[in-house]
Structure formats: structure tokens, C-alpha cells
Length: 476
Image (cartoon, rainbow, N blue to C red; front, side):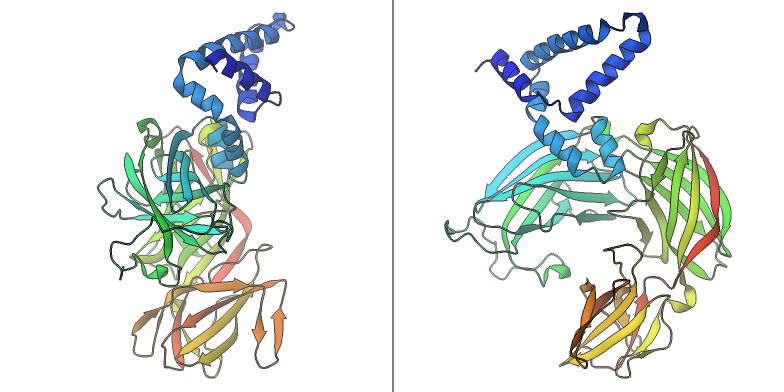
């Protein structure tokens, strides 16, 4: 089949125009109508004809363009996949996507990195996993520099759990201080959480550990099943994308619920906005979270990030210093107004709270949190709390993973669970409340009856009147 045949076949497949091409045509026609409104009946037809001629030329002459056209269905899938993220949706709509198209196969698992959306600080990786023998696989991701060395000052999150074979998955890498590197290694450790298709038995594994007694790369992997495959992709980023970003100096002081704060800078990227804050040394509480949004001069509203990294801090302070919002990068905004409507604090006198596990009592607890149960199981304590549900089907972390005994010795737990209820051993019934969620964790090998826990927050405050801060995007 030659290029012309491919072109006509592609046209037949595009009877229902993909969103991306519709947007291109509408944009081109709109420009022509604005320039020559007196040719209302002629220009749209001639514009389409011109587009088709150029389309034919590009398909025959440009490998990149032909590849992009061939991937239109997947681009459409990507647009649907990121629909819940206004920033990523705008990036796709504005063709701010770098194709990767790298695939590896091991142990009858195919891993394929399709696209990335990347800027100076954040990287969204879109990939698929497909297997003829594993029905429920998930990833433990890692990144390293191109020489295999570890990066510092970043976080990585995944939304891939419970995805079906062949469906798009997403990883998000967020760099705190340093800028995005020009390249990196992406390591995907594949783990099986489901049944194997017995109709096609597994042959000798292609995945072999270098050492039989291999060590886990992080303590969080201790409770995970062994990897059934491991992939390593070398990702190289277009410098055009990694250069995108702008830092605007603000240095505006304000008072919030009797605490003094300064919004120091705003970082504007295609994938998100970062608002950075500093506090006053005389404050009695640490800033943990904000309820806020931005509005541009056209009245368009940009909400806080709802899925992914919402705020970051530092090891030097309990304060969350950098807070994230959806980005107006592609909106051509000139001015923004920040509205702060609520705040979450950690009072400095509640950084640690004393819990008597045996007596099931607490000297103090954060707002809305109830101490539900504590049960001794051999050398462990199973501890459960409940808290007010802020949104439907939404839970949040109540305590940090570090805890202490009466002598100040530090321990940590590695995981916790959140449920709609819990089973009461005494009443022998399941306790459930639709307005609350229940969080449970285990204090392993902890022989004492008293523990000091570290709350994530102590209280949440709704403001009677929003705080407003003006931001000029034209400032350096």
C-alpha cells in the first residue's frame, strides 16, 4: 500500500472527525472568517480543500506527520484519559505532547511508553501494559539519571492500579527544587496481583534476579509480591518542553486566621501552578493545606489540584510551603486573582499527641478525629481512627508514619488502610457511617501501652470572607 492509499484509507476512518483535527479546522476557518467575512460561503470550503491538499503533502513527505496521523485514535484516548485534569487537557488540546513510542516485552508482558507531557518541574508519563497471562498487574516505578544514579528531591505517583490490560496508565514525576533533566531512566517493576490465565501456562521466566537473595530498593516494597518483570526505558525530552515555565515574584504579606504568611513567588508551568509561601516565626501553627482558587481577567476559574500532588514541604519544617493549582498557561491570561477560602493548620503544641492504647484514650485529638479502637495482637497494636468525610468517596491521611514511645525513640509504620467502616470485635458487628471514614494501621513489634502519634493536621478553618491577592502575570 502506497502513501496515497494510506491517505484515503485514513480519510475513510475519519468520518467522525477526531477532536484534535476538528480543533485544527475550526481554528483555521475562524482565522479566515475574521480576515475576509465577505467570503462567508466560499472560504470554509476552500479552507477544507487547502487543508486536504496540505494533508496529502505532509502524509507523503513527513514521517513525523504520518506517524501522528496514524496515532490519532490513541491521541483521542489520551484526551479522554486526562479529561479530569484541566491542565493536562489543555496541554493535549494545544498539542503540547511529546510522542515516545517505545516498547519492550518480557515474560509475556508488553510495556509501551506512548507519550509524555513535560515541563521544567513535572513529567506525566502515559504508558500501557499488556499481557496474555497476567490479568491484574501493576507497577512499582522508579527513575534514575541516564547513568543509573538516583535523583534527589522528587516524588513519583501512579494511578495505574486496577487498570485493565492495554488501557492507558499514568505516572507523574514532580521535581521539588531542581529542574527537569534532559533525559532519565524509567524503571517499571511489574507485579502480579491477580490470577494467571491457565490456558497459556507461563514458560521459563525471562525475568531473573541477579542475586537470589535480592534486596528491596525501598522498605515500602517489603509487603509487595515479587516482580514478574522489570523494564528500563531511556526517556529523552525535547528541550522546547523542558524549558517551559515562568517564576513571578510576589512577596505579598497577609494575615490568615491570626497567623501571618507571605506568598513569595508563583511558578507557572503548562502542567500546574505552584504558589510558594513563607511563615512568621511567631506563628502558633504550621500551614498544612489551603482551600483556594484563581480567577483570570475573563472570569475563568482555576481550581486547586484535586488528583495528584497538592502540596510539598521540606524536611526542615512541618509547614507545607508550596501549593498546587491547575494551570492557566494556555489561557493567555494577563492577570489573576487568588481567593483563599479555607485553611488547614497543625498547631505547634500538637505536633505529637499522647495515646494510651490499653485504656483507649487520648489527651487530645485533631478536629473531627475519633479514637475508635486499639487491639493487641501478639507483639503488635492494631489502631483505628475515624474522621469526617469532606467529599464523597474521599479519605485523607490522619497521622504521619513516624511515632514515638515514652522515651522518645522513633518508630514507623509502612502502610495504612481507609474504609467506610470497621468490624467491632466486642459487638461482633460491622460499624459504618456514611459521613465518616475509618483509618487503620499497625504498630508492629511495639510492646508499650502508650504511644505518641504525629497528626497531619490539628484543625480546619473556613473563612467568613475570602482573602484576595492580585497577581500580574506580566511581571518578571
